[in-house]
Image (cartoon, rainbow, N blue to C red; front, top):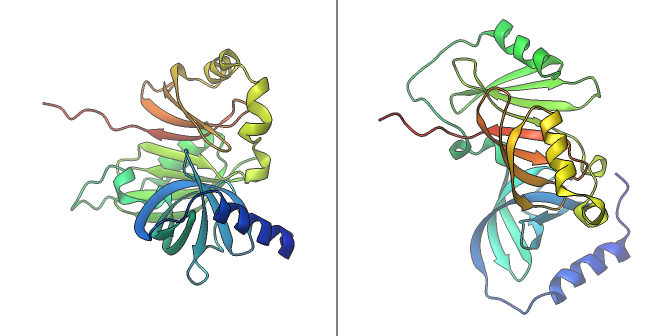
Length: 237
């Protein structure tokens, strides 16, 4: 990525500073999508607002435009001085946990499911909060993050496409029909799709997958699904 000219950086910071009245500082925890980068500064779209994130140290260097992150820090106006940054997918509350159980991963079963979804060959396996985080590389050269339960169930996947590879809402939404997106989701194996929200570079939809599971989808403004997360089921009585 080319460095942002100093004038552009100054203009962006001034825009944030002038877009809202002065506010008292407060501790915040936000969850949003990175939509811009200015060297070590990040702009995160939280849905109803955009915030300038100023990481302490070098914590922001590993994130790219399009990543969903959780930020904790001090908010003043529209700027957050971030004490911690982490990938939303790494949040423990985002996945079902089963305490006290250690099950060796069934590599053959995991690779079979990756192949069925065209996610490519596994290149990394890590254990995270009683789930297995798998990284693979698909035919387009994109990293795919998949999360499996200890029993080998696919809980979530995320194609790590860069932000510039996904059209922005402001450039695409006026020419996009809801029916076209619904048809595109049907072609990708989803049914009963319901629109939830619009973000900077994706829409959120609820749907039923081809495996008859309730899922939350991140859909770009072409109608392509690049993230799927299985929703928890109601506990048995």
